[in-house]
Image (tube, rainbow, N blue to C red):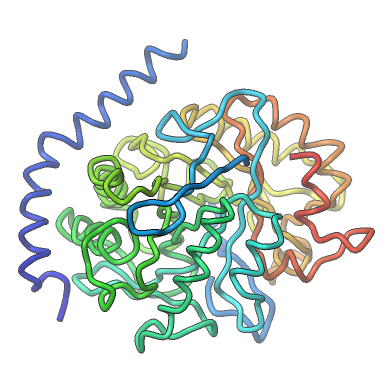
Length: 386
């Protein structure tokens, strides 16, 4: 059965259609008004090692009414994104796309990451029920991923928010209309976030994820703004009931503007509702690190464009966590930045940006495969400079 034929969802969508006409534009417009008053390509997907690929802070916690751990971010504001100039950055990574990857709970127990993103919900839109793909970790279609919910709740109890990434380099996804976008938002809300579906309809069991990441790398760019605004509306309107803070993130590629997400009028990033934007500074020669000249100027030039265009979102420098994570057929080193270059030439520059958020690493799998002196993985080696 498609989501469109479900009577309860259809009723909710009708309500949302009415709400969107009045509330969502007003919500976004009020944010943009506040922002104005408060302050004067080439596409390449995430890369994977051959034979294993499937796709392309301070926190504290308390219990919510369901007995789950409630994560409190100390970085909030803007289009929701948080923090103040000079605040310590975060390290974000992706988990879920590799057969021989360590478990999610191992990633959280390492204490190397402030946010972990599950990848990917890579089948959605086109009037079809969205579908999760966590590669060899579990099979959501048979209910095999429900056990992951306990790990998610444990991570949240450690102060590590867990987000769901939609899109990716592969899969079958795209949006055909405003209605399609709203149905997709409702499904994500009810199945993974703070909605009212029973456990049988939740692939990850009773765990309530902390938000959604947009990693849109194919198809048409239309209607993602509607998807983002509807998700943000649901988060703001109903999120308090779940006792869980919710966030929107996005992973555009570094050529400005991103082909699928903007920013620009009518685009997802142009909607002003994203808390975090982790820009992929790899697999794009025009703006990733130049290893032959050991020159980060292309990265820094693009960084300035992104931070200037999205002043009310926290911007992250997206880097490959190892050489293998960035290699593609066209470039033997498609953006991998050595530790010393990041520490000595880049980190002190990007931290001057008032909306600096930290570093995103693709991915946890590659991070734990790497060693950078004293048996440290990439995330540990850069932590002191974040």
